[in-house]
Amino acid sequence: MGIVATSFRDELLAAGLLVPLGADGLYGRAAAFEDVVDALARLIVSLGAADGAARIRFPPIEPRSVFDRTDYLRSFPDLTGAVVTFRGDDAGHARLLAAADTGDDWTELLEPADAMLCPAVCHPLYPTLTGTLPAGGATYDLQGWCFRHEPSVDPARMQAFRQHEIVYVGDAAGARAHRDRWVERGTELLADLGLDVEAVVANDPFFGRVGRMLATNQRDQELKIELVVTVASADQPTAVVSSNCHEDHFGAAFGINTAEGDVAHSACVGFGLERVTLALLRRHGLDVERWPSTVRDRLWP
Image (cartoon, rainbow, N blue to C red; front, top):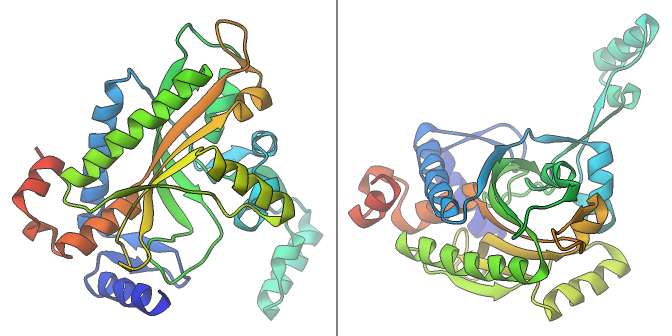
């Protein structure tokens, strides 16, 4: 996988589609790459409109108080990113500059800023919903930047990337129906774009012993369905869309109730915009202008 992933990354860099920033998993994106991302986002927005999804865009940073309530740290501490900043006085600034000038680790002089890098676009949504939902629940169209600390030579495993999510918050049956409906929609969309797509039951690599039990529960209850396609390696397909049932996890954590007074359930579908773009580049070639007309017409009608 490593050799194949590195080869594909090198092709993308040579074509100027990705711009190296000096660290694995961190890249700039060229105009042709962004054109595809923008077109995908428009398609997802149009699909979400069928559900009456309200569009909200959040920044890539969330308050630590919100992050703590998501319980993400318990499951994925190795992926977490925190914001730190300088809070010292003039003497502290002098020590900071002295450490930088001598090549020492000046970050030791920084302090937490009570802000976290968002690992999932939907996190900032839930505290805005505390209270009682309207009858029938609510659906939201979200898009933004995520951070997960897993540097890799695989271009599909970026540290900073964009998710486009359609999120439902309401009763349990509505959440499951939302998840299943979007598995179908996502599969159809990717197939329309010429990708060979498969829906598979997945489980996340939760951290530690308790995490292994969480992963088993996720798999056994089929809470997470991934749509996988070829990106770097045909032998190891990559998940480009993830459709998840959270059960009442966020409803309980953020005090969200249905109109009937029950703790709300939630479900989301997350399209990895960079990953889908990479899959299209791998399938149809690095020159977007030469992609099949059927694909281009779907992206740019």
